[in-house]
Image (cartoon, rainbow, N blue to C red):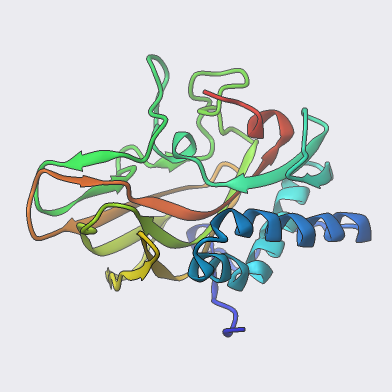
Length: 238
């Protein structure tokens, strides 16, 4: 197993409140994180990639438990507002910053119409904010006090990944520009980030990227990691 990656907390904070999982909850966590990883069982690279960050994801689970007032962790089976669990990060959670009306974006798919540096996930003026109420109610665009994010890699399913460099801005912290080294895994490309980013409840971030070498290219660029959330959020379809 590779050395554990650094954990990059919201906005450069050195700590976030945590609540330990019970023995039963830890058993569920260890069982279900492997089940999630096995979604990518056709690509051993990606399965291992997710499990390498297991320790950081466990910290995220403890942070989420504290943020959700000690709700019971039920893993993939979490249901309703009395439990919390996790799932792979969905496009709807990331691709709708600031939405208050209309139809939310439900896919990572897009076309980059220009080259060079541009906003990829959120922006300086409209970041991905876990405080947003979005379309309200149980909509998956309503992240307010319901979501904690942890991610340590990028995935791309386009034949020629267009992202050449990226830069994360988390809370008030601007991180350095990082070159992307895309590694193939079956018909998916992945790139490990500089660490595992942990975005606590009501935190915010955005990512800019350098698109090269040409414009009007198809992309399915996505964040690879886990959404920890209340059961009603995890069940929300739109």
